[in-house]
Length: 420
Image 1 (cartoon, rainbow, N blue to C red):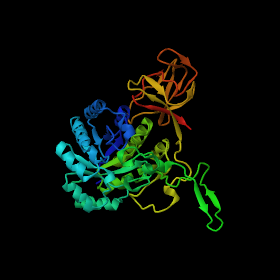
Image 2 (image 1 turned 60 degrees about the vertical axis):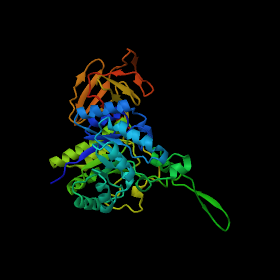
Image 3 (image 1 turned 30 degrees about the horizontal axis):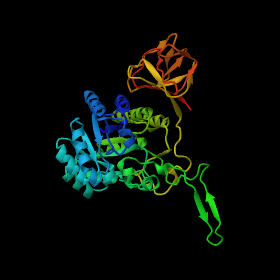
Image 4 (image 1 turned 90 degrees about the horizontal axis):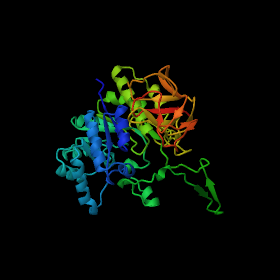
């Protein structure tokens, strides 16, 4: 029987958390303080707002996992201990930690909070999995280098150990994120939450003739050479194989520092795929079209199903990021009554509505504009662009922070987009 898997999405800030849950996530992960491996996103939460976010998720029957997977120095152990105690009091559903010492400390500070082992620990085999399981780990987030066959073997040996795998998002150039390039070049320590993403930079490569000392520059593109730039992981086409294995309990989307639209669109696509697997109508191409609307570096299927070895299919040699097939133009607020511009659009322009699955969309045709259905999609066009403060505009762009009135309410946290 195909196994029902948890869909786990990133929560980079309070709004992104709500977006991920609205678009179908069963659980989200995020953190507070520099002990989270995404220091930028952890600054978006205070202990108070993170506690409110956990309560919000629990009211929906959803879960929140605390990322405490940075590696503390000796001088920070007491600070780390205090942090775990503070997070414990917010009633999270699990701690994500990276080392044996952190596991033991977490069990001491919060014995009732389940422990998830971070992918940073690089759990690849049954030997390591057994050690962590004996230490009290409830779930391992498998190393991104692990194959599905390896994971199946772990599940056979330890059937009560939950296993989580990454299925979408940025891929680190280094082995399980153990990278020193950022530390070397910028002094920003990747494994303590402040990676500068140096692997995405263009580099200038040179070849020298040892006899003549002639030095020649080699470039792969106009910007330089992207020698470390891995493509993004995209496992949507293999999701049924993953589910059919019966070994995976949770599939995880990377991206706490990415946009709200990314959290919405990717969560929605994987939710559609998971539900279609249960219904017996899995269509990979349908979800792939949606995922292509997000900014990406090109897509790779990583290590889980097959070994990529060295091939251009898994490395982007041209650019560190592409725009995707669509431009996001606006985000609908929590009330559903107004939007905030995220890009440029003008009067009469057709914009596609991207709403949570199964959300009801009210059709409208009035002085402000139209909301209408065409084919399987819903669209909106404005006859008037009127801000909440009564100003009328012919077009609007992201520099305008005034809320714009809608012809009729739309589902909260929806997005508007148009082809690039």
